[in-house]
Length: 180
Image (cartoon, rainbow, N blue to C red; front, side, top):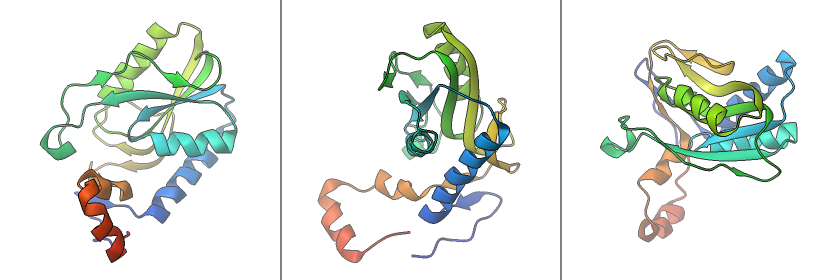
């Protein structure tokens, strides 16, 4: 299926483009030469990004659940909720930590999560952030990013098809071969 043309208001992203962005982010981080001990991704949007970076850098992945885009079918930011605990495979969160998400939009989530991590894990010595997209109106500045989006478009990511797909619809959807 072909994607609509991207505009200043809407950025449409295919799976191939999405994976390419993650790879470019990994190259940006590697090229900077910063050595880090752990990766923490923000669920849900940063999970895929964090998973790939964890594999490429061969480092433990921590997952912190956050949620703010629940209003208006996930298109409007509401109150930010941050999980109390982090799921991590090895040890505890300490040292140099790379915080990963898909985007920094307003910057509220990154700012609050950074404060949360420093409070909950005082053994963090350095915290840097990495995203695929950095929106122009953001109050936070990521340390690593791939694309800066000055017009603040709504980003239509390839996995959003699943947001409205329910189990009873899946068989028909798979049968049609619907893929972006």
